[in-house]
Structures are given as C-alpha cells and as structure tokens.
Length: 99
Picture (spheres, rainbow, N blue to C red):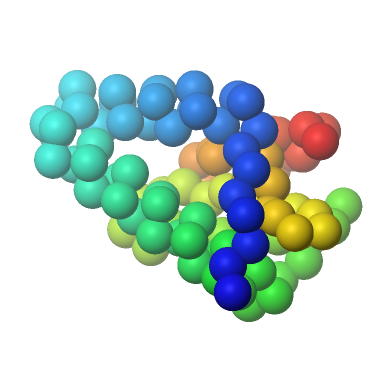
C-alpha cells in the first residue's frame, strides 16, 4: 500500500526551474522525461520508503537515474514528505533545514 505524498511548497518551484532549464537547452521532451522520472521515483518512495537509506536528520535520499538530481524525504505517520529536489553538485546541506 502506497503512502500519501506531501510536498514542501518549495519543491514545486524547484521542479519548475529544472523543467524550464531542460526545455530551454534541449526541448520539451527532455523536460517531460525529467518530470516522468521524478514522478516515477516519488511513487517508488511512496510504495516502499524503507528501500531508501536514512541519511542525516532522518532524511531518506532518492537519486534519479538519468538526471543528476536527487530528492530528500521523511516518512511521517501515513505519508512521505518530499522536502527538496536538488542537483547532485549542489551544496549537501541545501534544503535540509526544511520541515
């Protein structure tokens, strides 16, 4: 059974910025591919959150396969909360203060 997915409000602008970038440099298809992969991994985390290792501060990290991005989430009672979507090369503490 999948857990409910809750997004931190800043996640929407992060995903939009990533998609805007891919659309500018390579076209709408790459932006759509990014979004499809992101949604696939969100669903996977929702289906089996224990599959992803706990990092600092009880965060779990999901690395996308095709794109150099990851997202951090926490498991709550009946949901996972996606806190940040970030580039692998971004500073490692980016988004870790979000609740």
